[in-house]
Image 1: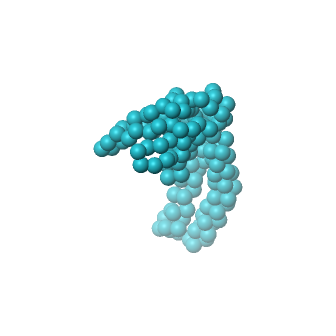
Image 2: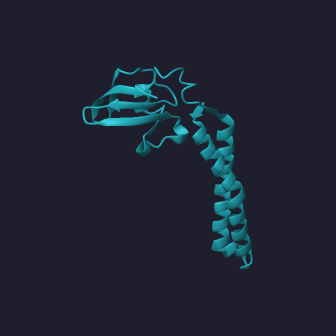
Image 3: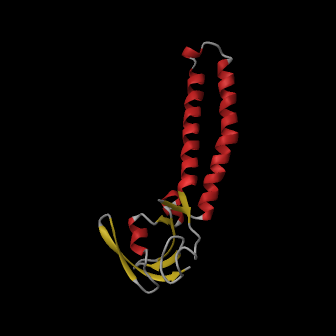
Length: 153
């Protein structure tokens, strides 16, 4: 089962709406223009538009399936408390080099460059269930990094 925050769910719904309305119309227009050029058997514009249509329809089905089968987490509520790290927690940790802030999210909305780490990632898994003051060792390629949990929101 996949987990997502309310913000992540809204992002998926927005993409679905855009693909169903704007993208479909854009592709339909491209198909009509390509058909007007004549012979479809050697029409690269038509082939490209059909490929774009196929990709768009596949993504729509994928988004609908995700939205139907996803579990929305409520930060603070689903984590049980602010005492333990769980899905939706925003944690402040310190390593020997510097301070980091991570938001533990479902895999569908992970963006490590923005501090959003998946609960399924090695780093996310390592923090789950820990409390403020705990020291967590995380294996990353080539070394082990030690983090101390300073704050949980």
